[in-house]
Length: 362
Ligand code: PEP
Ligand code: MN
Image (cartoon, rainbow, N blue to C red; front, side, top):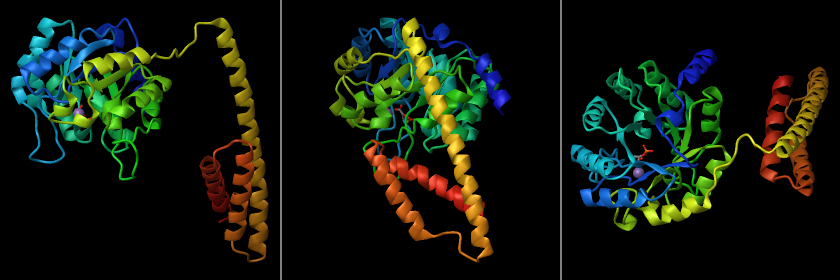
């Protein structure tokens, strides 16, 4: 699989060739849903003034969780997107969830398509979309599936690439979770990072609006995304967010977006300053040295574990000694705390070590 993904990565067309930008982060902005021509055009006009904003987004077919909610204006919205193109320099993007949507968008001259989270989970639909774009040179952005699974995300990207799409990017919009948390969707940063490791040339876009679910969290999530090396953001923007027909809590005005972008700065992934570069190299080598000591210590620990396991076997003593384990965690957490380490982190590390130690003795 790795080799196949490497080939896919090499085959991708650089994002700067299909989405020209002069300033990072690159921003895709616009309302969750296109609601009226006036709402679409007035939002786009204000967004066109933001130097980072290059693409105008608006959903026209809306996959709503519950029925009897606004499900989008449908095909009528295509003309409004066309009007945005005619009036501003923005490219347009909308969500497609099947072949019919793709067909209509291509006829309607939409520049960029995106596959929504509720569609990425369904290989039948993704394949249908891939077949519909086969032979067309259109960029497709793939949102992560709602559930925290890398496989479906990769699968959707592969299906589109197999259909000849070379202008691809992935959008992290967070993952649905039952666990109570301050975000609407768990960002699970390790999943997009793993995706990037497997397909290094695939651009990653963060959608802080759907991760946050509320306006006040858009900024910290955007900051975190930049720290993780995301180069682009998709941010839901509405001329009158409180009146929005979908996702009203997480949309901001174009003015608030411009203000937010004024505070954000994309991070360099490779520093140009020679001194900074050499300092980073020096610190990385110190970290690697500590890592190899950690590995040696773990191996040494497991040697003792094997010996104690033998002894327990010979004397018919149970492997798991719960009181020993509890006092050990208590001691380690207390000591780690003194050294400024997070208790939960240290506990998780020792839980892993202990699980392995028990396994070796069985
Ligand atoms: C959207 O972008 O408005 C949308 C429906 O997104 P998602 O597929 O991420 O829920
Ligand atoms: Mn939305």
